[in-house]
Image 1 (cartoon, rainbow, N blue to C red):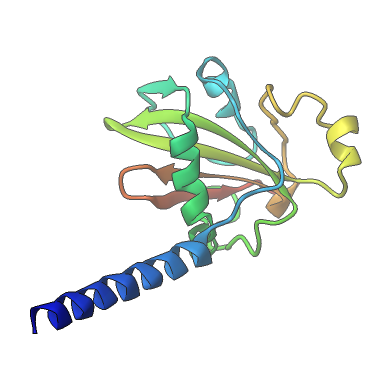
Image 2: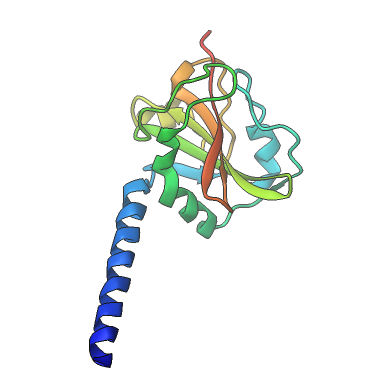
Amino acid sequence: MNRQLRITGLLIVFMILGIMNSYSQKNNFTPEYSTIILSNKGKELLNQCSRAVPEKIENYYDLTANEIQKLENNFRNILEIKSSECCMTGLKIEKLKGYIFQYTGIVLNGKKYIYINAFKVESKDDLKTYYKDWKTEPVIVCDGGESFWGALFELETESFSQLSINGIG
């Protein structure tokens, strides 16, 4: 009887782990192109000209691989939220594929966040032509609508907020 209880208990644990793994994979997204913008350039990255960005930032910090993994494990959850900031409120991001992502670490109200700067490219050649330094230099674009957006990912709660899409010029 004791052996049967242990086997049943193990089966339940494996079922729970399987469900959790399935949920994690469903929300996982690993971008083809992404980069970490170091903390010394964080302020520059948040100097966007046609969308809202977080205010009252206490500090910038360099992100770790573990923090990026948390973001990527939850990335598809951003597709569920609506933009709440200027300029195109109420819109959702339709898909993540086709965007290039820049990340920087920020601290707000004593909590760590990843600020995501996303921009769309038509082809890989755009990275060589228009965004040569995208891996180390913040990309700032005025207007452009849904091709350019930013958002916050809170590391503690693993949730997204402050989605903001560029205005249209």
